[in-house]
Amino acid sequence: MSGLAQALVAAAPEQLDDIILPGPRDERWRYSTLRALNQRTFKTAPTASAPLGDVLQARIASLSPRLVFIDGRLDAALSDLVALGDAVTLDASAPPANPSPHWPFARAAAAAAPTVALRITAACATPVHLLSITTAAAQDAVVQQSLRVELTPGTEASVVHHRLGESDGTAFVNLWRDLVLADGATLHWLEAADEGERASIVIGTRAVLGAAARFELGEVAAGAALYRHDLDATLAGEQAELVVRGCTMVTKRRHADISIDARHRAKHTRSDIVWRGLADQRGHGIFAGQLIVEEGADGADAALSNKNLLLSPHAEIDTRPVLEIYADEVKAAHGATVGRLDERSLFYLRSRGIPEADARRILQLAFAREPLLQLADAALRDLALAALARVLPEDAS
Image 1 (cartoon, one colour):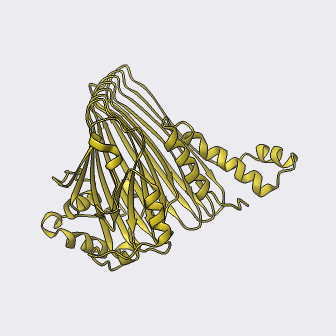
Image 2 (cartoon, helix red, strand yellow):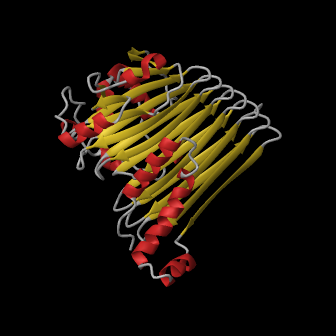
Image 3 (cartoon, one colour):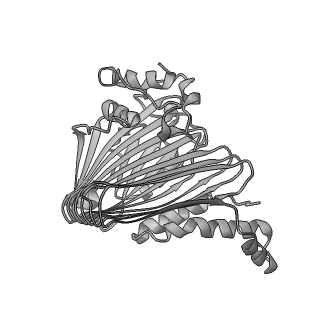
């Protein structure tokens, strides 16, 4: 058994004795090898976290309402949900969810980490800030977190997930989220990060949507030594809607792998996925999108678009759109492209006196911003654009 698998099993040996991590023959992990992680020796998650610096503490205090996890554990003292009043209830020892068997990392997180359940029963006027912080005490350790978010019928809420870690952190962070949207509920979710290039992060997100429920996911993925986000969304109720707007921007030797499965299980459901990817220097970006319209999901509307730019001859982008239809009267479209910056647009900007490096950055920013500008929640849209501005290189030459 590999070093990573041993560390995962050690956290919950009885539940995980049969766990098998993805290998080179696993098509879903074709472009994201675990070879380097399997050769490492990992520590168990620390029982005590390292002190937080003044800058990080100030940032935490500036985000409210908030739910804070430190090295995988819920920190009740730093969390602050008082502003939401009776709109939310928190259960720090909820029953664990049961992830799909083909998600070994999600299984590991659900088995090893106490499941924290956030139940939202009334509309929240401001976003809830979810902070996952990895401290220096977790160097070379496996950090796991299990979270369940439930929205009751007709409820609308926004969540911003901030992943924060040491700039040179080497932890393996494994996050599992189970999102349940009852009939008519709406959840806006933004995924943003500030992690070092040596970190390893695997996220599993399962969303189940009831009738007329809407889940909107926005993400800016800057990558790490390994970054992988699996989204499995099931449109279980009639007229359920999934909207995904995101972009990947990887530089240096960063690696970002986005895998989305949208399953239409009921009639007149809608999925709309738009993702942009940019890879510079030796960055590696991967996008896999799978739209499945199951038998009986008549009247479904499924669309996926993935466009990518290679900014360096040493960068790599791999994309794999898949469409499977088993129902009638379906509207569906999918497509993917990989190209380079438009030389005509670049020439136009330079002819107006704009230096080449600035012109390249302008074009890159315009390309990456396109899906983020379509986010419906204004507060999350502004945060997503700010996150994108941080990850685009200052010198685009």
